[in-house]
Amino acid sequence: MRIEHLEVRYLQIPLVTPFRTSFGTAYDKDTFVVRVVADGVEGWAECGAEADPLYSSEFLRGAEMVLREQLVPRVLALGGDVAAHRVASATAPVKGHHMAKHVLETALLDAELKLHDVSFGTYLGAERDRVPAGVSVGIMDSVPALLDAVDGYLEQGYVRIKLKIEPGWDVEPVRAVRERYGDDLLLQVDANTAYTLADARHLARLDPFDLLLVEQPLPEDDLRGHAELARRIATPVCLDESITSASDAATAIALGACSIINVKPSRVGGYLEARRIHDVARANGVPVWCGGMLECGIGRAPNLALAALPGFTLPGDTSASDRYFATDVTPAFELDDDGCVPVPTGPGIGVDVLPDVLEEFTVSVESLTLRGGPRG
Ligand code: NPQ
Ligand code: MG
Image 1 (tube, rainbow, N blue to C red):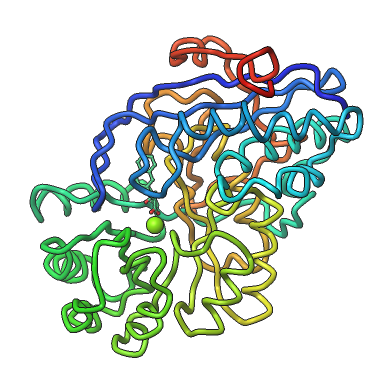
Image 2 (image 1 turned 90 degrees about the vertical axis):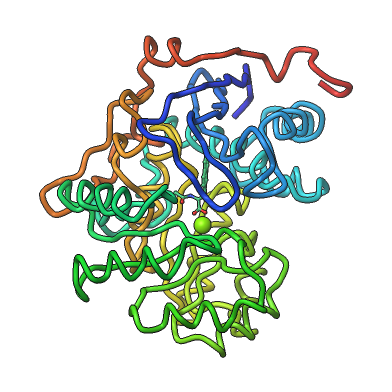
């Protein structure tokens, strides 16, 4: 393929309800999408970064800058030989910046797959046509407010509940949800790095509640701490922020730092690396599930394809669109009667962008190929 046009489009989409985690509260989904035109075909992808570097070190303006000044020039240098599987090697000299690499590779992969009339699911090796949907529930002001929210999600059909936790909001909400819904509810928690190993005895107080897992309790660079914590608590430890590559996954598994992995394509630099993590985990008997960054339909669609791979044996954060958005920029993903979301079957990401809605939520559009930066 040859790239004819590349642009970033910043979007601000209102959330149906504020989403509070241990690192902050989001009221809107701020993101940018990349649109590429190559060989006359359009490709789309959504950046996983947030406006501020609070979940990870990456952030939207930084991702845009590294795309414009570093990644896009290296890919444009491939000339007519641009292919999604070449993006990683062409951009490998640039350290880190996985979310910027992810959005570029994914937009090109969408265009390439559309050119060949192949869906993301088929390309990645999906073995299911729909995937069970979990839901991530933010930190609330009170336990009654939390139970109201969980009531609503269970009524809608979600098959697994994930509670965001932090020091001061952990044992009480978990106990309340367990007591109200019983032992059969699939329940897990996510700390987004809010604890230290000194909290091990406190986190062990979650043991009696038979959680599926505790996600990323400790700082992202503390694999040793997670290994030690895993020995001190009964709840399985799952890593999110710590796992940025298949190599990380292999290391964490070997150290006993986790027994489950949350795979987010944006965090690991794209779907090809995400599939490698799936493969490493599967070879080690480690279950994986598909996480999310509150993606709009453009990012949600390919996540659903990934979640249909055979090693994704736990429900993901692949919720329906209306969990986050009253209006999405693609046709909405909806839960079926079994609490599953369908895997798109059309070519590429398999969903079309709704131009009027996209325009409504657009903050700005900037070319990545025309003269933006030192090398652009
Ligand atoms: C996680 N996601 O698993 C993340 C983190 C997260 C669904 O829990 C705005 C944009 C706010 C992205 C809050 C879920 C966010 C965000 C949390 C991602 O750790
Ligand atoms: Mg997480």
